[in-house]
Each structure stands twice: as C-alpha cells, then as structure tokens.
Length: 201
Length: 296
Image 1: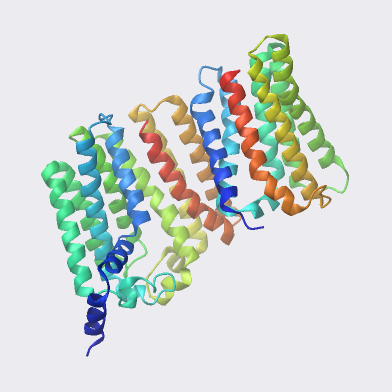
Image 2 (image 1 turned 135 degrees about the vertical axis):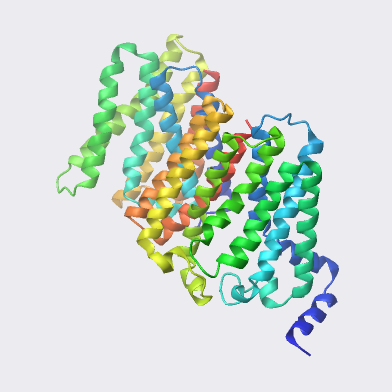
C-alpha cells in the first residue's frame, strides 16, 4: 500500500517525539531505566524512520516480530525498575530471557505452537505491566495522576501489536489497508501518550 | 550552425526566470544545503553566540556560493558523462539547455565570490573553503573521477571541508574535534555514495566511470559501506563528546548511529535493493540529524 503524505508527517512526528524523549525526557533517572527507555524509544524512533523511508512493506519482514518485542519489554523494565524495587532483578531476568526466547523461536523453524506461546507470554506480561502499573500507581497517589497516560500509551501499543499480529497470521480482523492506514496514527498516539505521561506524571 | 551555438542561442532566448531555475538546479540545492548545514553545525559546535547573526549569515552566504560554484563547475566538466547516464541525462548541462561557456563562467564567478568572501572573513576559514573547492573540482572531478574508484575518498575530503571550515571560523584555529567531525563526514560519504553507485551501477558503467561495485564487486562494496558506517558513527559520537554535547543528545546520537550500523550490517549479510535504498536515505537523515544535534 502506498504511503500518503499524511502518513509520512505522522511518522515524522512520531520520530520527533521519540527523539525528544531519548534526548531530554528521561534525564535524571537511574542507569537501568535510562538504558531501558533509550532502547525502547530508540526502537520507536528508528522504526518510524525506516517505515517513513521504506514504506509499509517493511512491516512484512519477519524481523518486525522480534523488534516490536523490544519496545514493550524495555519500557516495562524501566517502569518496574523505577517503581517496583523488589521485582527489579527478576524482571530484568524476565526481559532478557523473553527477548532471547522470542529471537530464538523466530529464527528456528518450528512446527509446534511454542513461538506463539512465547510471544503471547512476553507481550502479555510486558504489555499488562505498561498498561496497569502507571494507572495503579496514579490511583494510589504514588505518582502524579497524569502518569496514567503512560498506561494509555501501553494500551494503544498493545492494540497496534494485536493488529500487526493478525496481519501476520493472515487472519486480520480489519482489512490490511485499514490496519496500515491506522498504523501511523496509532504509533503517533502511542508515543505522544508515553511522552506526555513521563513529562507530566 | 554548431550544436554549441544552437544551445547558446536557445539559452539566451529563455526568459530570465527559467534560466535562473535551470542554474538553481545545477547547484544541486539539496546536496549543497546539506553541506551548508554541516558548515553551520561546525560553527555552532564551537559554542559561538548564536545571536551573532552577521557572522552566521556571512558564513552561510560565502559557503553556499563556494559549494554552489564547485557544483556548477562539476556539472560543466561532467556534462559529457552526465549525458550518457539515465539518472543525469536530463540535467540542463547534459541536454544543452544552457550554454556551456556560460555555465563555466557562472561556476567560476560563484566560486571566486564564495572563496573571496570567505578569505575576507577569515584567512584560515577561506583557505579551508578553497581546499574543499580545489579537492572537489580539480582532484575529484577533473583528475580522478574517470580514472579510479578511489576518487570518492577525495570527494569525501572535499565534503568534509565545510564542517571543518565552520568550526575553524568559530575557534580561529583547527582542533582535534574539528578534525574528528571532518572524519565523521569523510567516513559517512562512502555510505552515501557507494549505495548510490550500487543503485545506478549500469549508469556509471555506460559512462565508463569506475566505481567500487564495478571495480571490486558488490561484496567488497557492501563491506566498505559497513566499515565506513561504523567509523562515521564512532567519529560523530567522539566529536559530540569532545564538543561537550549534553548526555541526552549524545544518547540520541547513539540511537541514530545504531540505526545506521544495523542497516549497514543488514546490507552486508542480507543485501537487497530495498535495504540499499533505505541505507542511502537513512544516511542522509542521519547526517542532517547529527548536524542539528551539534547545535545543542
């Protein structure tokens, strides 16, 4: 599907927001959250630029599944490291093991459902962490109420991931054209909610 | 009536706005603009007061004139091979839309004004601008381009001069950061030009211009692109550190550099026309973004 000028503008704005977050949005945090958020928003930035340059066809690459795992894993790691001190080490182990498992199961041809299970567990846990943790923390008053916007971003990226997964399995709930038309807007909104949540939360 | 005389007559019959538009296209505005951005970034990297608008405007004008002049002179010199290549055969010089003697005169006038203005501003700055023009027109285009694939190194040195010139103007001397920034551009240029020469390999072959792909093969060319990308990214990060760039911006530069490296690795081990094009475009965005980051 040909990319429209509006799609390109939306992707460029996504890249700019992600660049802002890497450059100034995460200053003053600990080393691990800074590394985790830099990787997460860095992937968003570079991925946005590559889609901008190469078009939507790049989303058909099998690497997309692995790369798109990095975003929720690193963002959730940053959140856990910042706000759930007792889970730091275990979540770091989960992040590393999950990423390796997704990479491995996607690079070796398998007949069973292990790749799907690994992907579902990884996205399920990391996605729910990004979605729920900021909202729970906001409700508890541990952070500013607007930090819950990070959770909204988490929900949106989950929707984006689901749509892409359906596209890849060949059983899309929406047509390929509709999914691709929605994708730049979804990516921009996701990034905008993340950035706003970190900025005002 | 000869072809040159016909083109000359046709040229003078064109409305002045059309002629200006033709000459504007001969300056390759996007490429000249990117090189100008590197010169401005070099100046800003010296932590000069941004509000010193007089100097900045003079730097921009002198550098743009020198770059545009050298580009027009290259167009004039390469008009015969440009006419043989699909990508360039529609250029005004290749199609005879402009008088070739007039192109030479315009190129020389722009170059003399640009370099002269630069020398008048600062002798060292002027010398570096002149070196850039000399390497580009004389060494790269006239001497080596049709002889060896290695001519791109000299083209690269020429492309690295604006950022060195800008920084030297800001500091009053050449320092290691300026040299590292220039190296960053020098190593970036193969990423840009070699992907280009792979994409248009048949064009260059038709014009008998030796390129890395035609001389050493695609494998060596891709490896060269990967190595030069690593060196370019490393040089930009070291220079950014040397300038005293804030950690956040250094992080961002690291992220953008990682994107460049990943694409370079992919093109080496899993080459495709699409990734080749992606690297070519990404390299341009990377350099522009790096220059913007140097402002901070």
